[in-house]
Length: 240
Ligand SMILES: [Zn+2]
Image (tube, rainbow, N blue to C red; front, side, top):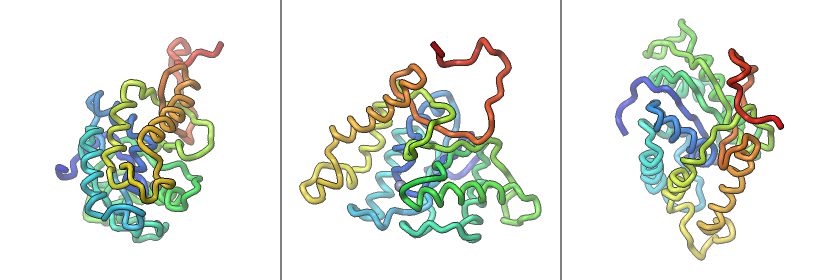
């Protein structure tokens, strides 16, 4: 991965392969539009049932290459113990300052896995700290303009969805780059469904969100702010 520079979009998530599942298609679509994208994983995945940290690092790099992500790194926050501490907020704030994203994608703030919910709060508070002029982190202050929450893991109605019909297959390939997690093996096969089943499940989820907006496949997001409209004639998604 090349060194940090200025990026348009930064996606932060608790675990390697979270981003691939929740907003990988959107990152790929943005890269295809010429946007510079980056991923910051908070943990290295040492609690994963399968594979080593080295396996997961290699797989994460391969997935990033497939999604045309320009920069990716994993912090050393303990897997399964992502905590909203000041130290962790500072670690993330420093990365936000180095990467200078305009848009920050965080996990939705309610989640079954505590790491996902905490990563959301941590990311938000880190983004706030990153903008404080008097907080000296050795990197100039920067606050993202926009925060959106990838809500695929949460049972909430999205504020908007991104059409990933053209990116669905490549996003699936990025997820399958995590061979140690998803490859067919007898051991633990109940926990890790076979590739065809994973694909069917992903297609069902993406198809559901696509249907809400009249496209084939989509990824859901929540924004806390209201939408702002200039031209009523340009609002997408048919009503009746
Ligand atoms: Zn996760």
